[in-house]
Image (cartoon, rainbow, N blue to C red; front, side, top):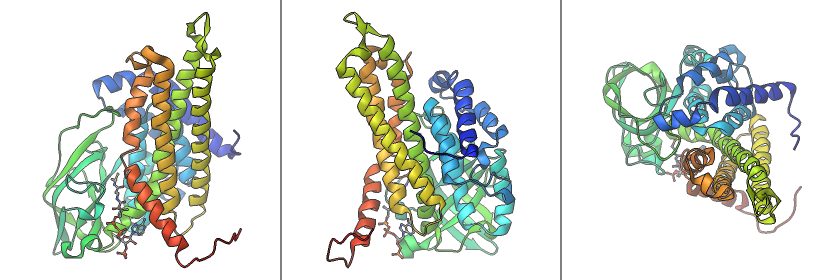
Length: 391
Ligand code: COS
């Protein structure tokens, strides 16, 4: 399918695909096995200006949008989503600054993130606040011209590896979600520590750690927006970043199709390649159709979001839901097409299927995405009594 991408977008796609082919595929199994952080690949992406794709030129970026970023994430994900999430999570950590930072905060942090010299990370989730993001317990207490943070963030992608962290903490617990505030923290601040690297089912090369705040004193100027805006900062950030997870799903599904199709053409059973069997063709046909549908929704959603609409919660949630459910199904089917070989570690689809599961969980479970879509839909239909087409 031709999505009529611009020359610049095609260049980004081809460059990301080249990095995936030459730098990621040769090492992905080893990184997974050793649970090793992909530092060298991050350096390659930094040298290729990939970290600045969506950051305005005035802050050292390339001035693109969500679409450019998602094109890069999709290609990297064809090879390995542990690598692409490490890349994409820097964007997640960056969006609060991009969306709500003062000029001073943007000038200080965005060029570092755009150059790839510093990775960013986003700290929202806690041991007792996953889907219920409004239930966070980390506190930030104002003390003169500082805030003092106490609490623990859990399962933070790029935790320990990133230099810049955007963190949500409660400044007024009595106000619930409206009592949350967002802050910028830097690695090395006193009282800011990291937990051990988590052992995961998939995306094993990516770093997932706790962020631990013990009387961590930060300057008051590191507050993002104003007190009480933290929940909105978090929600708007997630709206912006969820298409990136969809891009991971599309890329991962495509990578699995590539593996399964090549295998089906070369695996001989009953005297001919299994690709000649209609049972296999039908599976590959469904995998391809579903992945192309996800890609179409992804590109359309990105273009819509890059046109700066006021609200895109529903659209971001729909593409995250659809593309990641697709990735889970397609990677599972790729293992099925490859049978016993697909189940073995020496073939990449085993890792792809393990990796796919997290896409249905992080940046909001797919059940939460359905809640978001459902609530927005109900809002849209409020007051309507007739089903009249309005174009
Ligand atoms: N944009 C702007 N405002 C938003 C918003 C959005 N996307 N989503 C919610 N809000 C506002 C609501 O309008 C409401 O404002 P008022 O208090 O003025 O009415 C406020 O925020 C609270 O919203 P709500 O009552 O819907 O919050 P809930 O506690 O019910 O939670 C969900 C809403 C479940 C959607 C939210 O907690 C969520 O997204 N959870 C998943 C978190 C997640 O993705 N975690 C992944 C970890 S980060 S990688």
